[in-house]
Length: 491
Image (cartoon, rainbow, N blue to C red):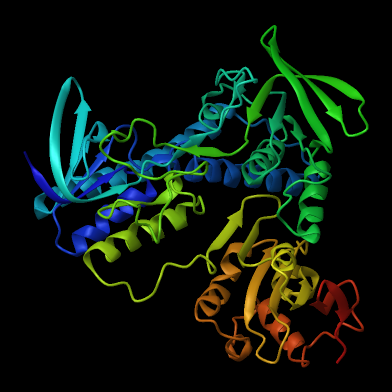
């Protein structure tokens, strides 16, 4: 029976990162994957959907520019777009596979394809291609990811009514599509398909606005752009039924005022979250790993079984690629090393691929209010930033939250607009260092750049901004929130 220092089950972002970190410690590691290397981080997930988004954004921008010169936009070939996405996925998967192949000669790394199951605390059974073997492991990391949540009352066939696993199997742009779920993924796909200008998108939202966890000012921008692109948002609605009729989708909604409407579209996308993959992963009579409704319970990546760790979407923590990779590396460091500090999530950067893109780190105003935190918040419109003006796109804003005291420690930041994702890393670092805004005030940003807007936000909090909130109302603002009561700051 072959023995390993570490067996990692699942070669998605978190499992792959864990295996690579173990090699740094000169440990003998086995990585097991039953399906596709890269997991949802590459296939039918982060990389593929974001490639769709980039191409959709280019198409929308192209049409806009052609209108400027009174030129009719050419037709978009779905197969060409699909091939581009598939090419991006293949490029990433090939690199991961080549990397693993070259690592085999190191003597530390082994990759096996098959289904893995824990027979005991230290034994893993691997089955596939008609063969079964058992290996021993000092430590085990579970990184089997998640899958789209199915609603049993919906006729999901992955051809007409689909999840994210089936949507890329379409053969052409649908003339109409309904999306069930107005969270991040649902809104991203609404942005993608409306951006190509070929699909009438319907979006079902049980509340009075999409993205219920986001601040009102963020949602207003996103909703306005969606509706400008022809998206029909069914607000305050409940899906009563959905059926496949004559190869199309018929769905019925009941609104809060109790009236009902019936709609007919070509396709449906169900985007109501994801569930962890842990069924049949261990013998419950021999391994008692604690789980909850959200996933495997873990303490700083370690399960209740001392030598077994869980990382990525399989846990009850944040389901993001960057978080999964962070957890994978951290688990290995905890097993074989001594992490310098505990794993924290307060400085995790996020990005929503919408129109425009939305990037954030730390708390937003909604979360700060829910936690009962007093704060100061400054908002700067993109129309005040020279780079945004030069790009002829001033839609968006920067919003910075700090503690409502003399220290003004950074609580969080949200950027809505072009280059949003490139503007938040310095703030993420300062949050992890528990620092105030003085360091940001000293930064000299390149000109012209979007990040200059961050410096102007800091100067506003310090009372020495170029643009004065009392003059440019509607463009810049600076206020406090104490016990939920807002008050403008005056300088």
